[in-house]
Image (cartoon, rainbow, N blue to C red; front, side, top):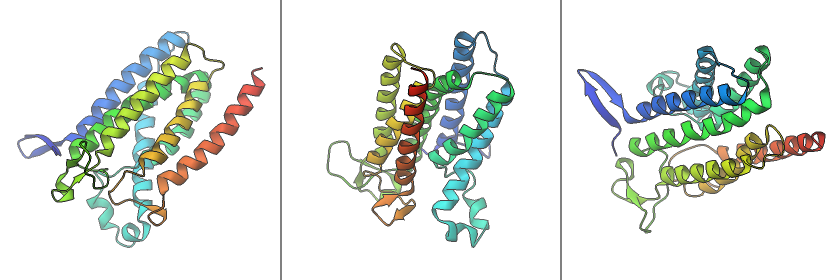
Length: 248
């Protein structure tokens, strides 16, 4: 599509990287604003966002390499060739959450209310990031004849499902659902837990449309993301039920 946004001399600005940066900035501004408004005027340090970004980068890259461990670890040079691109959302997510909880507890910031805010933060940066995937021509879907089909550079003129746009649409729906639930919220942390479950269900379904090369636990049947989503649904439901019982 438009993998390269523009050039400044010999410097190339890639659309994917630009979207990630924009999404991060917008999400950071939103997080600071909501934290100050909902958590007694707390002013989150920039160090918080630096840690989150670093954890997300490391987790996203590590899970990307683990999709094809033999391919990458047998030849480390391939890792450097793919260093600027190729991230797995769930890898970033799994690495970020423990860092966030550790940081919040260390600085005596209420964990569950902050996680509720971060549910929206994640949806913001994720949706803008997926827009970068669309323009970058990655994470595309399977061949299709439906009217939504789009030919990407890597699909050799064959129209495929624009799974990136499907995911953005789903993320916006989840955001709308959370805004609605927020008005009738029963306990702190509820929004974050519901977000995890809703996205896990949606991601499992969206994986059926994906046509790009990615890792599978059971070849062509269960992808890494679908397995992670299933585990997260089970664990999150157990946590949700436990918190709800304690709050009665």
